[in-house]
Image 1 (tube, rainbow over the protein chains, first blue to last red):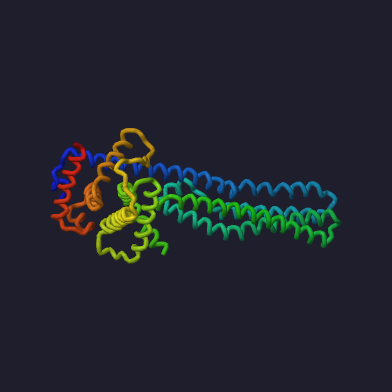
Image 2: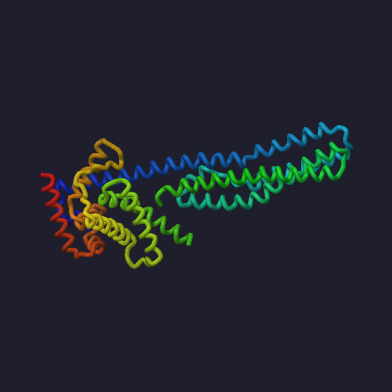
Length: 201
Length: 159
């Protein structure tokens, strides 16, 4: 039974009802506005994540080996062939890996989720990022190590020691790049989670 | 634990605007409303694990919210603070008719005693007399009697 029937509705009570309904409506609208603006800010940050994971940067890695192949014309054919073949193998491996394992940030689908589910998704992606780092960037820095090693090897009369030195330097450079990229990605996830935690839940 | 958190959030979210409305009616400024809201959330979370669903979840949420607000008001009064009758806050930062109406609502309800405030808020939420009685701990007849008195008080404050 509606309790409003039990209490005789007077003009004062009707006004009270109207005002209360107004308050609830304003609270709901403010909540929606807060949530929309938060989602817009999160979308922007996650968009930058997509660029970091983007497939385009991987193609830049082709430049050194293409340049080296044309430059080292004085080395043996076998040497150049092995250089090209191994580099192409690494490149293809990384491209395929990118397509297979890039954590696609499907913003439209994610923004349809409630804030709680969205937070869970972001946390899951952050955890997956650690796994992606080991596998994906491991391949990248091995490749860079190989390229630098081969370049020095070819420059210095195909001696082994320069190759090893070059490979070690390349590995360090690759690792630094990979760690920096990884930290930047994790930073974005943490930023997003901090933003979401500001929303009352 | 994650599932529990998920269930809690989903359940409480449905009553968020109601809890905010109750906090608004018992607080004097935006910071206090936010603090009170957080405290209610904390109390609800602490009680969630032991909530077995014997009572209706809606009743439980209202009870915790109102008890938190009333306790806070009592603490403030014991400390000698007076709740202003005039509203000098504008949480929605508006001067339009809607914001003014909300201010008037605050003015009307703030003149009532703590228990009367709780009763009228529950009544405005559309709860039955039985439900109101369970939440505030009085009989149905008492709820009915008090609502009539509240109506008279509101009429007098308008005159």
